[in-house]
Figure: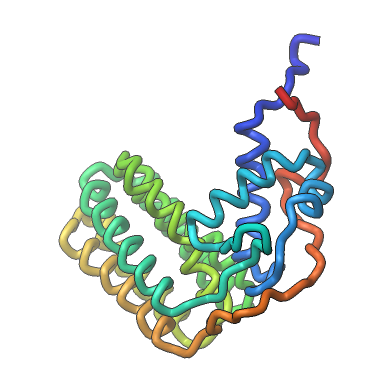
Length: 245
């Protein structure tokens, strides 16, 4: 069977990382909760090695914190960390927008328009998952068209820190305004007005400051010893064949 080949360790690590990251961002694993490689290996149908690698990456990205020989736990949502991440991600989106606007095709603008329609509909119905997916799809058009892989990687790394706060504050007034700003961004992109598109992009990210300045969880000294929840992630719901070499 030529089509059946061992799954690479890199792929397993990435799948574990994506599943655990998404569960943290969605709040399925709460701040302060202890995470154990054995539990997540069983949930994901993997060995412990790729889960440990995923944990290490999530520590680097600020979603987990580790005390050697003691515990690894989910970090608290700390305003200063979110503010720093938002500043970096916002700057990368402005850069991507400036590069992308002159390269956009009509189909790209229509993709953005369709995503914003889904975003606005999700906000109206209070569907936070659909809203954030649509928001990502809209802005990802500009990131993709810009062709700036460094900007894309930076955005992918730090956006999860921001999304955790956005999920908690969903529906507090800023989302409806975002749909209107999206409309302005789309119109500027359609008109080829790079400066206006960059201005609106900057305004969208400045609007996040209001969320950051609200009180958030403070870090706790003691970890929460709660069992891991089942991870509802389409890429890893079923166990996979794994190669240990």
